Length: 166
Ligand SMILES: [Mg+2]
Image 1: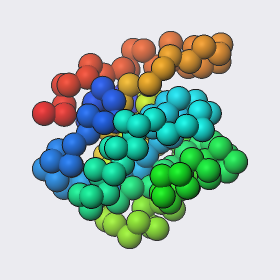
Image 2: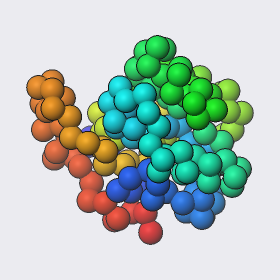
Image 3: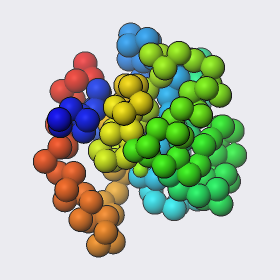
Image 4: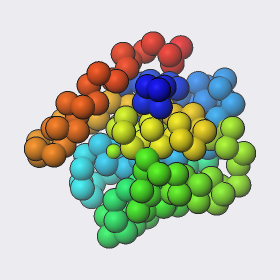
């Protein structure tokens, strides 16, 4: 039953995902997690590395949408800075947010993958939705106790990076 926690592909961080890789895997759209995937938790600043990567993806015709469990006041200004569509209150690992986003993208779900840093939300949600997932390691370890507990629970399911992305 642990397949539900298994990502399809694994990268160290978002900027390592290349247009060439996505083309090879027939991925035309990405559903992007926000916190600790594109930037650190609740950080309003877009890191240069994420900014450049998003530009590269757009230039290569990859459709992008942010799907975050966070709330509108957090997600809206961040997405607007990047010129990206978004779904907030994504309720991952439930699939409503992913379903809405895929519909808005107008792509077949077989050509869509979700990118995120958490096994129990991003990866599990993708598996429940029946789409591929790209796991990236969190940008920065969280310090709050609930998060540390969550990360400890994730540990047995964490993939070794570079195993499946070649
Ligand atoms: Mg996250």
